[in-house]
Image (cartoon, rainbow, N blue to C red; front, side, top):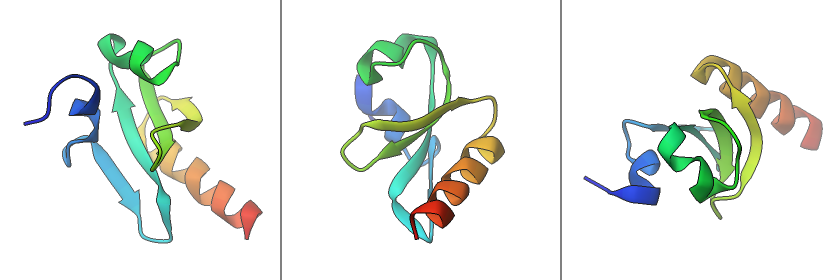
Length: 75
């Protein structure tokens, strides 16, 4: 089990979209917002450099839709 900053990156907390491997959906708790330089807990799209790209979202589904929309706009 990972601790601290990388706990959110455990398989149970992340999900990779097959078409967009550079973004991960991560659920950040109140105790982790400072680690990712965000102001509130929620679902975020994080790139493989651990930079928040999109969010916050109330659910994993909303986050994944935003990631898919972003992929469509970029390609």
